[in-house]
Image 1: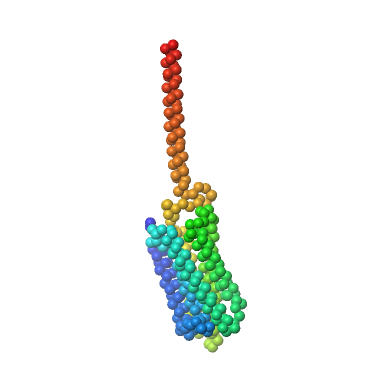
Image 2 (image 1 turned 90 degrees about the vertical axis):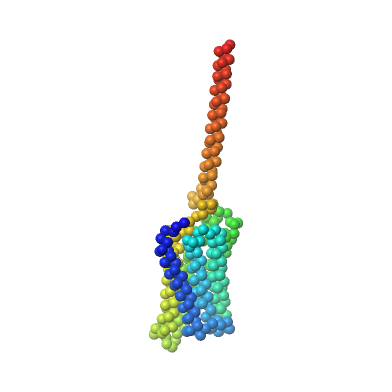
Length: 285
């Protein structure tokens, strides 16, 4: 099935992948070149895992998971396969986000730094909790075949909206965290004097913002939405009969009408025959 505006979609997709990949590379360069590298020993090297894992999983992989249904060359794949890929990517992003939180708390506890005092930490932890709840809801309601169709139809708009809300919240949280880290870390030279690390990391923030904007644009275009499968049974929004069942019901009713008319015709013929027989008997008498 051809996609409307395929070239535009392909251009935006390639741009999103390129910008997202550059965001991950810039984050690695930031922590390896400017922040002394990575480690897991309770020092600042362990804290450096936090931005790397968040940008890689919570931003880049989550963005890919959001638009995976929009890829036109996957429209011939089964819906179950695409649901599994969508859930798998989100699960990987959730695991990386949880590990990034562990790195932060370990670093704070080792240095006796208070936890959960900044707006960045409040919004970030809220985003992680909502993301995990979103993942569990999608797994039990949409991936497993247990939930009734009426419940899926009811929760689908909420699932889509909350997914975009969490993704936008993650973008905002990352930008707050980058700014907060630069204010704390850059003392000499100060952040306000435009040092190379500050300019480089501000560029990283712009890349993350552009990536989020591209993902939002791709996922909100109705002409790039995955078409419904002909064999799928979906509930009508007005609470009517499921799609695909109305046609069969109409055919059944048509067959019933046809059989009823045939029976009526046979009954009328019998009635005419009886009337003719009675008329013949009266004439004979």
